[in-house]
Amino acid sequence: MTSKKSILRNIIGREGVKLLLRPMLHWSRLDQPKDGYSIMLGVPWALRHLLRINLEFVSRTDLTNCHCIHVVFDRRRQSGYEKMVQETREYFPDLPLSFDHYAELPGIVVEKVNVSTFYNSLNCATLLPKIQTNYAILHDFDLYPLVPEYFEAVYKTIKKNKWHFCGLEKTTFDGLTDDDNVFGTWCLGMDVQWLRSHFKPIDIFHRVELVGPRQVTLDPFSSLELKTPKRGPVDLLDETACCHVKNLCSTFLRFSGGRPAKIVWRLHYLWYLEYLCDMPDNFLRATEAMRAANTSILRVGSYQADFSDADPTCANVLRDELYRMEDVLFGGARPAIKQYINAFEEFLKKYGQTG
Image (cartoon, rainbow, N blue to C red; front, side, top):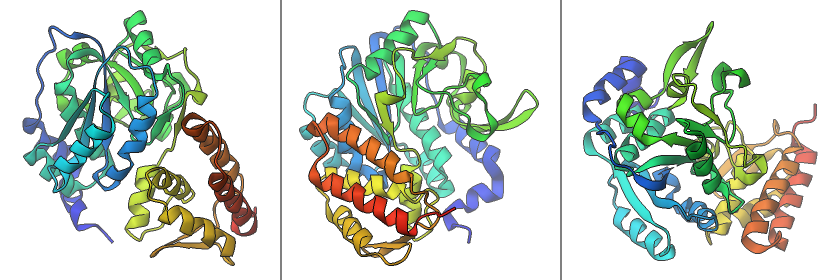
């Protein structure tokens, strides 16, 4: 059934929505940039309670050259915004935090469209005009740096090479290949001065384009990456430098809305992250539910999810990534976490995908 909030996009289409947004979005040239870099972090309002965990990992990195951490909540100003900002500042008094929300008119449009790609794009279009440094790093809400040099390595790479973009990993979204040399937006360094001098805010919204003979849907910035040869990898880091819980936000939104989660075992990351936030109820319920289960349906609180299509090896991936996160935060995996993952492994062996 079509969501009422998505009717606008269905009626006028992606390009129609962008045409509507175009006159609402502005930025100026950055003629006198400050030294260092800025971090851009978009936060789903429905998952704002997990912001503390992301910033906890950020706070443990080397931020020597970081001028500002720009945080934007993906809604217009909501009730509770001021409290959230105040509590976050108090929890991280040493972080150079700046907070934003959507402006009224573009916020209304994007909220009525209610599509994740538009939220992601408006996050960037809201923050980029605020950046005062030559370089910025787009940092995903569901990505957790695990090494101290994480952000500094991105900054030093793009500055040394005088690139327009650099990234941790290439993206193969919707038919892109490694040969296209397009880097994922979950960790993307960019030259803000070049970007704001040559493009408009609407240019960073997702689009459909031909890449060679292929018609490809491009994420924000991917189209711009293809317009410049000055891009490359952060060769000072590898995939072990972070834990990236891809699809965490979309899985949560589908699950909390009563719809089947596309990558259902991402819920186990969510319940772990809530446990880290001193919200242990779902974590404890899930652990008990897995032990007591007699079908592939796992009931946690008032929600349920079917794990019959989950491969048992998912438990190995979860163990590896949660143990690495636990090492950073606590020097090793705590007993409750080991029990949680062991229960998940046994549950999937019984009721997960069998062939």
